[in-house]
Length: 268
Image (tube, rainbow, N blue to C red; front, top):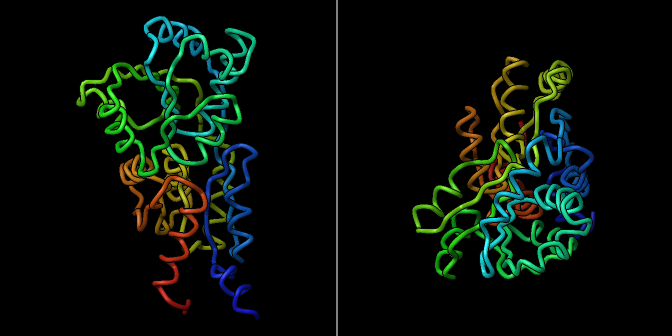
């Protein structure tokens, strides 16, 4: 095999578990391109703009002033905000928020790209995670930060903002719920294929994997987290986090997986 092809398939034959988020198969495709066998566990249902989200967003927007910040922590938060902005103003979030002159920050390159595709001009991209972004926003003189997030989102980001003298305005704009009907099939897959590692991209995926592991009655595979907030959630759920992506992106997460499995050497 040519050297370039071999380098591109460093995960050949490796079994890697991941929890599917709706129809998003980008992470599974990245693993397949590198020769891995993704064990996709379709355990989460996603509800954008749940009941009460519109009213909560209206209340938060009423407290914002010119120069305040909007901080986005995931592409899914961007999608949910787009759905709510359409209800409030009939326009995508870029047009809807332009009149409020909010400054925009994002955690990770993937979130920043999703925000820009939605018409938002991202000024700051937190490449070292949400807590590092909190520090950046405080240094930039932020007074208030709108945080459209998941219902299960880690509380460390808003708490760190508060410690730094910045007022966080968290708003639940989407909800991930465990599909308990899918647990038996997911547990059977874990027992049958025994993944060598698992990749976690959010607090919800960590909770879902932990539920599947309990259902299967097996030891949890070593997990990789896309960022520090996911690591914290995974450890709280009883999972063992073996590595964390250097930046919150799928590419960096898969790269960290390659280094982790490469360090373990060939399988016995």
